[in-house]
Length: 253
Image (cartoon, rainbow, N blue to C red; front, side):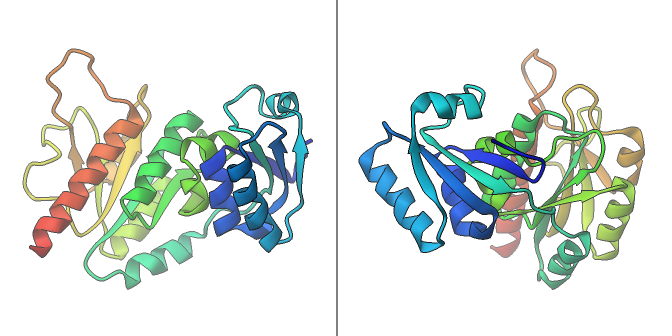
């Protein structure tokens, strides 16, 4: 059972990412008795490499542990780790040559949204994701699963004050762009958004908070032709990250 010092990580890709990226945090793995033989051998060999205990249990036991979530027959117990350090993230930004991407999640309370944002951030090569200590989802089993393990590969930094963190990034030459559907300038308008950049993404309900929006260097909106009115926060963030990658590619060419 979980305790205050541990969490769970479930699903094939998240557990594999855990073993590959942070084996010291994995203290036990449970697999279903009905798991695919090839998959079991893959997990077993990885776990044995790091002396991680692994046991077979009935599928119903995993259902209870994960509250019926789609665990794919594998659950790992994870020692809760500290989030990344803002100073280290700033150092990584300073050492980056001409391009760097940071994602700032402003009060994203849904762990599925946070996990999806982190997954896209890792795919697009972001250096880290910044989240506030209050009024925000935190990396947990749902985030690990939704991010397909990306939350165990990319630095996640929790901070007390997003505006202070934004100002620290500015001092390192980072341009801060808030994704805000109220903004007149579109995401792909000039100037292009390549180089060293941080995207601020707000919740679907509230968007970016007013004080954070004022701290941004630029606000951009994503043009929409339909009548729905807004995009899922994770989808909007992914569109922004793609546009950053595209602009960086054009700058090189």
